[in-house]
Image (cartoon, rainbow, N blue to C red; front, side, top):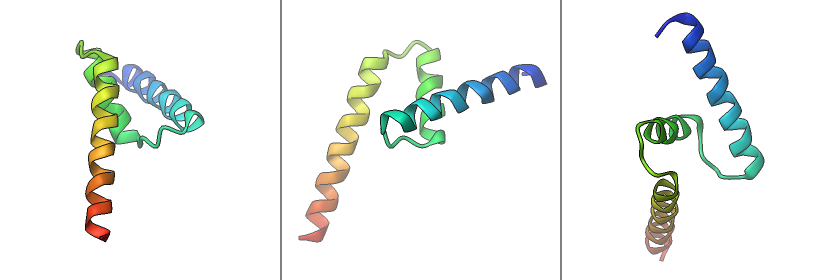
Length: 68
């Protein structure tokens, strides 16, 4: 990837991160980068959203279980 393409990719990720923050998704830049890359490779965005939600539910349940 050349310098111009890398700069555009960085700017795109900056925009996605800003939108994510405005929407309060709680997703960090590395996670967003992975999700964007998966979408670019043809993974269904709705399926990814469902996986993220399920992982959050599981993490929350494990954290709650650990505190009791």
